Image (cartoon, rainbow, N blue to C red):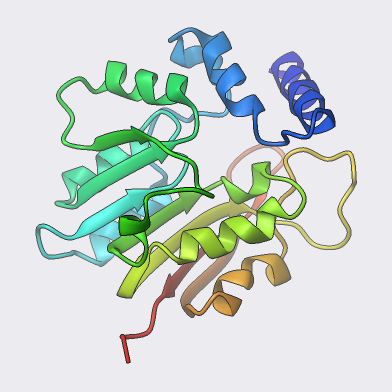
Length: 222
């Protein structure tokens, strides 16, 4: 595991040095060659906090949801099970191929797309936007840009659910990924959303890793 993480950091640094800080995603998934066990960060199960939220907040059938940087598809499949019409996208074509391989009969619409260049018809058109750990693996100005791009997917009264690792204090410039602090995640409010739920917690790893789970809502259209 340690070697895999070290190799991923090196891969990300190489792409950043070439002026393409987010270009390493496709190479990482392509190297896995369809083997989900090589995607070391994937839990291969839905986020438990997303499960809890869906249980506590049932939605009418047919509502639209989108999953950001969907990885191997576990959370997207969960949303579909709860009645959402789900679009799940990733910038990596190899990641999307792995989702389709895992779930050949899925009702989820798995697509290759770029968070910074998604179809205009997606803008403010989803009832639920789910973001898990995408922002933290971005770098530089793309972090703030990604928060705005994610927020812009939420329809009026639509909700944005954000799950991420968290931190306090200064950032180690060599760190990867870089967890979000409170000011950074507050960027969703600066992007025009209202915070309706915020949880700071430690997970069950040894040692525990601090996380945020937050819910934001776009105000109704004027």
